[in-house]
Image (cartoon, rainbow, N blue to C red; front, side):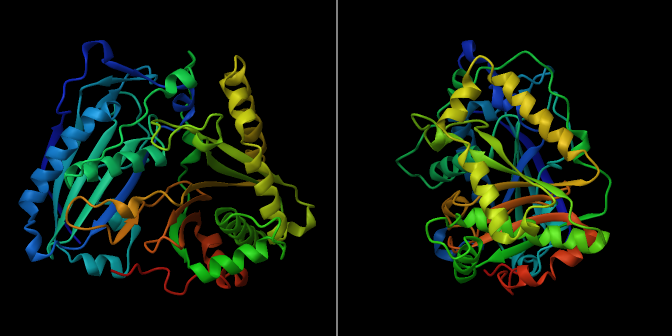
Length: 436
């Protein structure tokens, strides 16, 4: 598959940002966010002949609607300032047009993440925060008429939920919808920023032999997994996300133990939790920015041999602690120091040689598959390869009832992980080939 860039331009908001709003300040939670980009690629089949869409007018329609959308999401049309605490507005978003000399069906029949990554406008994990544009988009036009839209938004200003809200609004404008939801942009007031320098997490991306693979769980397997992870109890059943998280951790721990030939070490599980619905009163789903924190579950090496239901119980307990009281404490006078101390304690534990850590983010139920720009909904939505060992991203499958897990592990551990008998009880056999 060869990709040829045809054009690259900057798209600015259709309405000029008011002069008093030329800078958008980060919230405290933005400051604590990693300096990566949040990437996603949306794939679309070729428009039907009667839809009167070709690659030329699709290109023009996307540019025009993007310009209009950026007027509402104006922080996305900016550049991160040198102090990394704010965004200079009005710089625009990068928009790349590229030609792909391949058929979309062939790519999706056996998706290779290294090829998928080429459909993005930049490397989302190349750490460069200062003076970086917040938003970059690449329109990929396949020989067959299929389309891939690759989007990268800086994690310093947006989380997965914000990315989803932006895409929903952009798609609605493109297809001419009358009802639009403007983003709620007041999170800096809720979580005031602090004057401090956030060190770049260079330790997260190491030159290791790691690999990212995709695993899918269908409706039936999720129901069975949830029952098993709840140990047969209906009153303590974990959520589907908690059950999948526990299973992946269990199988990864099995793989690591088998390779090391030693007893099981202590394990730290961190899971990103959306704070919007946990606040009092709850924030709207369309609230803009990084509005999440990690729930931390520590599994000691001597805990009941880390059975599946034990892992699920520890994880559920950790997530339940992220409630309105937690958020209120985070917003308080000592919230910043408390958050930093929590991060420091977890890092100290994770950097011990005998402790393994796994990081989870869930995009389950985010409506990526509803993004119709005028010629139909996506046939597949995916992320790119993640160069962070033991990182896992969960997404809804195309049906909306299943879950896709993007798992990054050491190469040797991945070989053991994907053949783990417990995992194979629940993972779908067709999980490596999304259907169109």
